[in-house]
Image (tube, rainbow, N blue to C red; front, side):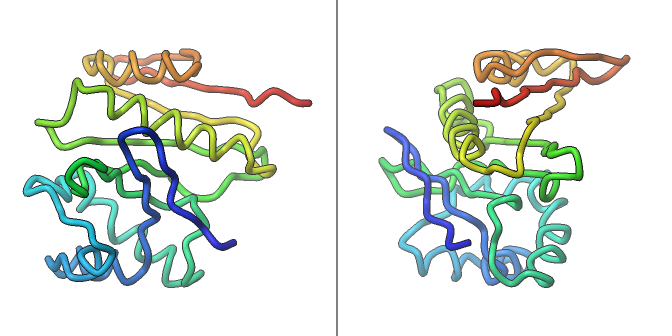
Amino acid sequence: MNLRNIHTDRLMLVPVTLEITKSLIDGSNKEVEKLGIKLDKKWPTEDTMDILPIINNSLEKNKIPSGFETWMIVNKDNMKVIGDIGFHGKPNEKGEVEVGFGLVEHERGKGFGSESLNAIMDWLSFQESVKVIKAECLISNKPSARILEKARLKEINRDSELIYWEFVKPIY
């Protein structure tokens, strides 16, 4: 699959490649800057740094992003990476994928989370292998819960820490 950037009014979602992953792990911006994109001084976040080795392992096998890894969230106004959105891998045998997202702290509360999640949900609507989109967030993370609700995910369960969400794609 030849992935294209996803464009919204204010954002561009850019698939993270193997070269970008290796560069970020090494503490370098050079692979991102080759695309004409700058990094916000607070990105990659600690959470992003934690998942980069997992993304790297996935991309080592496939070499080319499938779309089910991570996408950088780029603010078109200044062409800076302000966060990321992605998946915990390709769809499982039931067609389920789990989505996660995060923004640098000073860019939260501006609608970028909703805009990026809606864009990735639109992309998922064209992925025939996907039947169910799942997510989870901390009970205390009310802004993320609101973003998931607005994207039509439904709360299906919760425990002492997390709320579990799900969106079942309509069958046409």
